[in-house]
Image (cartoon, rainbow, N blue to C red; front, side, top):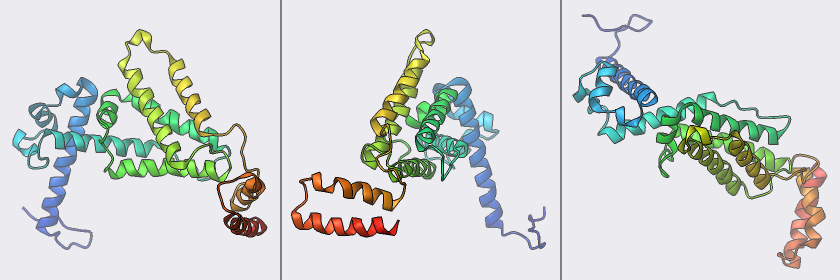
Length: 248
């Protein structure tokens, strides 16, 4: 058998071909486990069932994953990557609050459409925090929050906002999935979403002109009413804010 060749007819190194084959098998195993999870639930994801679905011998699984928990972690990572691919990012939304609603709805819809996978991804407090795809998804959320803050819409600290948004979406899905079918009222999801919106955003933007200059003018106007800073600190901050406002 001849070695696989590249486009310039140079034989690919044997180690490269072997690594590609291992990665292909690993991906097949993860996809087989994810499919079993979706169709039959977590209890169906056994070594024997996954091996049969992936077309490999059971010992082959343990050449790629330390144990079944390692395979489930990989399936969860596959889920985060799938969810990330479904996200649409608008760097300049016309309405950043509606953009937040849409992002929250997308997260909830993904969970309702993939209940077993979502439960695996988010059912344990620490799962996913080291996942590259999870972190990339959180960066998208951070971007949404930052646009809210820049436009004067944000009511709370950015970190608290991220925690509230993420917690309400996760809680909404897991609560919904825990309910009997006849008790699943869509009003639960709408109410949770709007409660999150009310907690995180202002009804009207505190800054009329988006950007540093508008924010500086808004803060400059409120500065005389605050008592946290000393007179010297207040004077210095006032100078900085005046310079930022003048640049706009």
